[in-house]
Image 1 (tube, protein in one colour):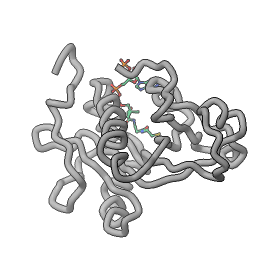
Image 2: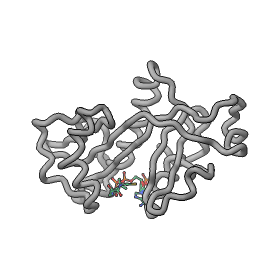
Image 3: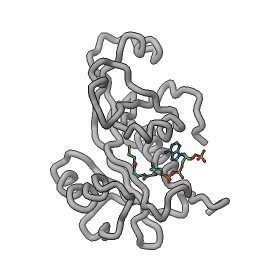
Length: 181
Ligand SMILES: CC(C)(COP(=O)(O)OP(=O)(O)OC[C@H]1O[C@@H](n2cnc3c(N)ncnc32)[C@H](O)[C@@H]1OP(=O)(O)O)[C@@H](O)C(=O)NCCC(=O)NCCS
């Protein structure tokens, strides 16, 4: 730990399995707590979404979930991304869930999760499976968190209807200038 912030070396990252005890996890969001405790393993077994746990001293302090995705881009967005391929959708990986336990917030774990996801997708998953974008459906009040790491709001009309969530993407080839450390 450096200046009150965790570093990757403080944390073990494992794929969710039934012998990990997630019962004490609390990120103060009932949907995310419920997903981790009751649904995540079933979704993983059904090959819908994989979950990775961040463990510190045998305690689950955070988690994130990844699945395959595809996004539509508006014409302006294609220009911004320097894409001139006549495709309807572009290959992506979605951060489908992401949360940090309330007792460990503001200590750098959210940053570690985003950086881990980007690293895994760029270097490991991305070597086998092409994915140009990382996507996320952000709560409205968390947009700034994702913008902090270079995510931008998807403007295609398909994504305008969602009430609670805002669809966002990070371009892995042309990330905009951001505060990614
Ligand atoms: C959102 C969440 C994951 C952030 O995790 P965290 O461990 O507290 O974040 P960190 O301490 O790593 O912060 C990373 C950076 O993001 C910034 N940040 C954190 N929350 C933010 C917010 N709501 N808005 C804007 N910036 C935010 C921090 O200032 C920090 O900046 P810095 O590294 O330049 O100092 C956490 O608050 C959480 O789990 N919330 C409940 C679940 C949730 O809402 N998940 C997201 C669903 S869309």
